[in-house]
Length: 126
Image (cartoon, rainbow, N blue to C red; front, side):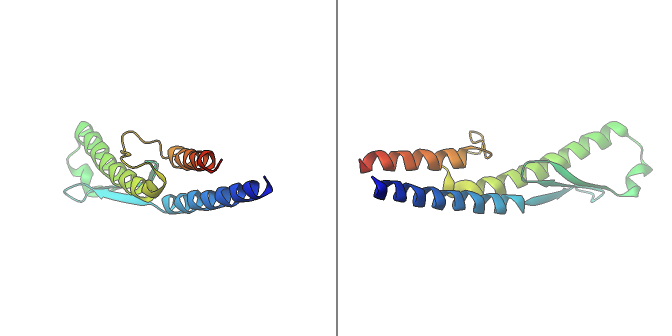
């Protein structure tokens, strides 16, 4: 039994390091999107949090708050989409085959999948 416990600890440590490596990679992800005219730029992190918004002063030459708001949202959403794609790709090795971005919770699913895999492996060893 001690041998099985030692193997489980090794498996856990390996899994934990894989999850930490993915966390570090995701923490470094940011994406910037820019409006077609270059007057608006939004930068987001892997979780879709807005970390920077740049508005060129020339944008105020034609004051249209509705158009400005719509364009800011569009640029933000483009950046968020790109960042989330990169985060999903970074997590792919820890996800089940066939996982999709839409059906994946990147906060928990990679670790849960690895725990499930280890649990199945432990069951097969018995």
